[in-house]
Length: 231
Image (cartoon, rainbow, N blue to C red; front, side, top):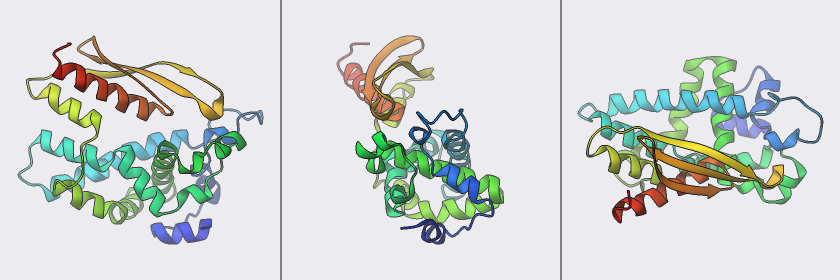
């Protein structure tokens, strides 16, 4: 897989190649090189995440005319979760063309779900900046078509965050928050620690090799605690 083949797969060719390269650059690539922040794909990931939510939300709104807000939110969460994003990224072989730091590469970063998922979001963000909203929508919908259909047909398993949100909000509204407490380890092999709160009360703790994984594990613990009436 090379960059030209990847662009062919997503059906979009970048006018700004530097922007495309940035979308494929993990933060570990510049660590130790004396480069300042903003050179990696994290900001593009932030943008792509928001765009993905908007595009998928609009599509579900159209396809599920009788779906209530809760159902739409749950279905969207299944479509844009880390697992689904990583599966799409792997189908595009995006790991082959990522720019990673040596340590991250050696430790298996090209095959890590969190890195693959983040890169997919970054590419979507880059497409938006390069070609606008319509261009990003034309990239997103074909890539996510199969996932959309499976989610709407109930063929995708709920992730822990979605399951916990549904569990809590089934009895009324509640404020759910995930707080990153600390990070440990070298840059290429960090461990993240996250606490989950419901209306200010601690509900679960989780660790993971990415913030998303730590949040999922915090939700998993919170589900178990809630079933045991611990909180």
